Length: 209
Image 1 (cartoon, rainbow, N blue to C red):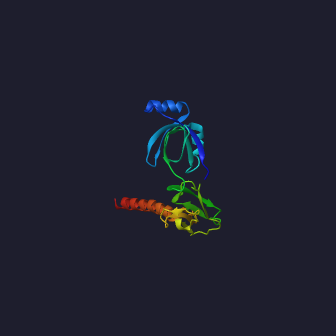
Image 2 (image 1 turned 90 degrees about the vertical axis):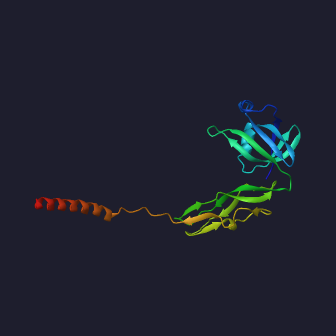
Image 3 (image 1 turned 90 degrees about the horizontal axis):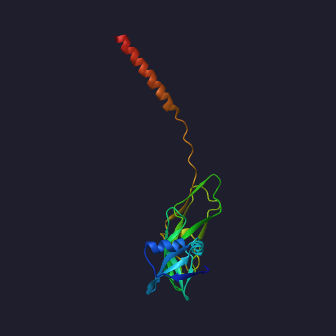
């Protein structure tokens, strides 16, 4: 995975008011920490950062006044309504260091015609080198018939990657779609019989009078 360079500024003002002011200037407040270093409060360029974080587990090269650190986004706080990022926690990583990350599972191909494919897991946890995080792990469903199941253990992992997710975790289930329930004729007839029976009971009551 290639590094994405972001030039950051140190932050000296804190609090909600300062954060709102940054966001109005199209910047994102963030904190950079890890490996025994003191946390550094920074402001990131909004547009470039949002583009970078479209890539799962993007490896970021953060330039803070000439001090460059490799980092991963560990916590991204997003506005629940507007398409903006409110704050980011960045953790420093080192080359050769292994990290645990959630990696998307990508399905390739098409199952047998007439089947339905459901996915129970859309990501799996892997232990990988921080500088070699895959953007996704692929698994083929090409031609799979109904009744087929694929588990985490069926994944072909990139070299050096270790599966953290339970190997028995069900990723893909191929089934036949359930048929539309037919109209229950017996139920309809039962209603008619009930009406008829009610009429007979009324007639019996009248004759008894």
